[in-house]
Image (cartoon, rainbow, N blue to C red; front, side, top):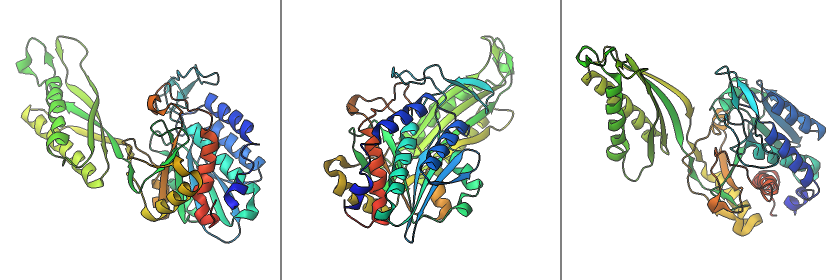
Length: 409
């Protein structure tokens, strides 16, 4: 029973893992600024006798080579969010701030997405596998990835040469703690799991004038209002009802005074889709509508489009997903469940795509009262310590077992 043997130290190490989790929760760091986090992860790995490869400024990979056999990579993201925590936990990061190098401004920071859970669970699984190497064979790569929240971390590790620094994985695994699954459950599905997403900044050009003489200007506020309204027809009238798509206008900035018609306006949009062709259609439709409205309004210059925070579709490959689901069913029983697609987005697939490796990704229920649980990115998001931390370690080892152990629980 190799899985249970590998996990035999789970109870003995529980207190230390909880203390480590509280440390990471109290010390969150922004995307691509996870320097102290990376240093602590590396220290924990080295203290356990696990080799470390640094990839880029804040990417860390623990490497356990254990003879011939498959290569299994498991990703845990490490960054936090630029927001304040309001969980009320005695280990909350309340009052923690950090200078955001991207904006030059001091901002609150908090682990309100659960990446601290991911760090500790991956460390625990790597330590368990390293301590019981006689029960499995192959190579395990613990990939601690920075910068998921700004969609830049996976690309940064690829740009830093992760494909050349590490062996090609036979499978690339990932998990995310969620409030939308029963506490302690693990949920997985084949096919689209997390949506493709993009943010778009659109600059509209008008012609400034006095508010009493609107005929002498081109009002970008009226133009922007028409665009906001017309964009709603994309999902309602251009996307097939069986598809899922979202177009959100989250920001509209223009003007400085009530009697001044400004010469520009800026809209910020966000799109989501579970199909690459649908996403392409959304972006083409947005640009078509914006350009047509600008022409109709006599805009003096064409609109400008800037795409950023772009996330690929996360679509689980069938074969590894089936193997992981079978392992979950055998080990977790009723706590192994089917997971519905989540309209949030991930940069998880960028690294396995760079390797040309199949991947699968699952959800981990983090709240006993899951029907009333806060969502990820809520200021109140702070998963229950247990069974979340134990279950996260178990899930990683169980998911890796079809490749590394070829054994039943």
